[in-house]
Length: 102
Image (cartoon, rainbow, N blue to C red; front, side):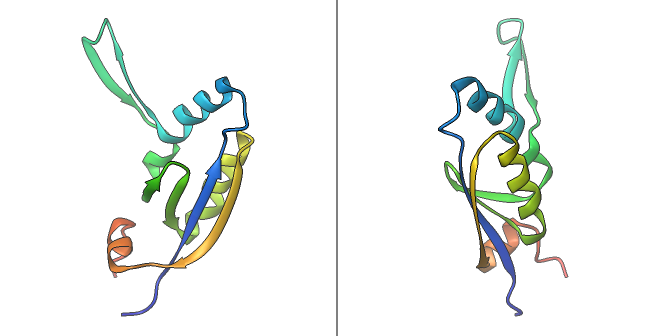
């Protein structure tokens, strides 16, 4: 099996005002919401709903190498601090990111 690479992204927006942090979470990760006192429930999609990723803990994502620039740019638009590193993917990572289709 050939070695495949991905990118690990470590980010923080904690130094921003709370209103910016809330907006970032909604736009970046999406939001579960409801209307009519819970009668209608739905999900507002965020940026991460459109790309494959694996979230380890708060502020740490594993993405495909080709998506790392887009993800970093999205975080920086909200004034976040971003660190990106290239990593070797495990079999599970390859499956989670949809790279096993060859």
